Length: 114
Image (cartoon, rainbow, N blue to C red; front, side, top):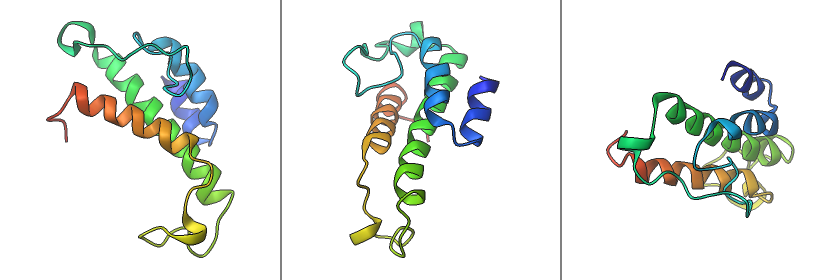
């Protein structure tokens, strides 16, 4: 987990996901890839604190991937102003879409987690 965390801090988000994915039972870490299995169905019996953290770090890495590929690489005056519009809209949606899937999975597993 420490390697993946450092990779995220350094902006090496793909590396972080590649390191974390094998640690996450029930999913390869890339929801958009066809070789990914469904998330675990029963967190009460299948989940562990480490897997919970792995999934959260994967979601964060994907979120940061989307942020770097759009907000940083394609920065405009509209990039940081909400609501996003015009040049601030994401063109490369892969990272944000993957993060959304991971966060939706977490919400399904832990609906009361705020």
